[in-house]
Length: 102
Image (cartoon, rainbow, N blue to C red; front, side, top):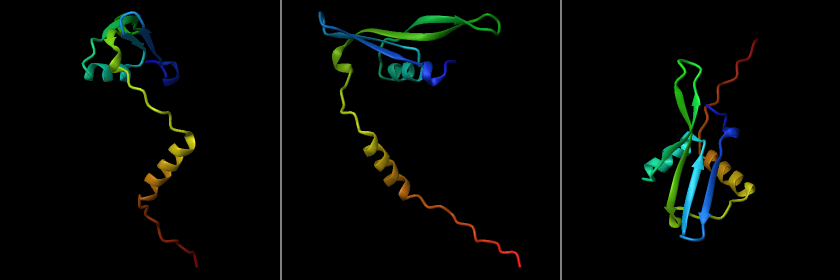
């Protein structure tokens, strides 16, 4: 399996027919596409070290309607950090009594 930094997802818009094609090497992203009902197929294999079995390492979904891609405003880092702080402030932590040696 590839490290997180080696995984990538590529999107390609077609201005001619209003479709989008996507490729990924991230198995998590591929499963999201399958759950969404996209027609996902394997586009790349790697031969495994154990038993020489071919393992899928890249997937694609082609000619999807362009509406499947949603745009959203990027949230600045400071806003994300503030939201995380607000979420974590409601958690209770146990404090242990101090033990003093006499």
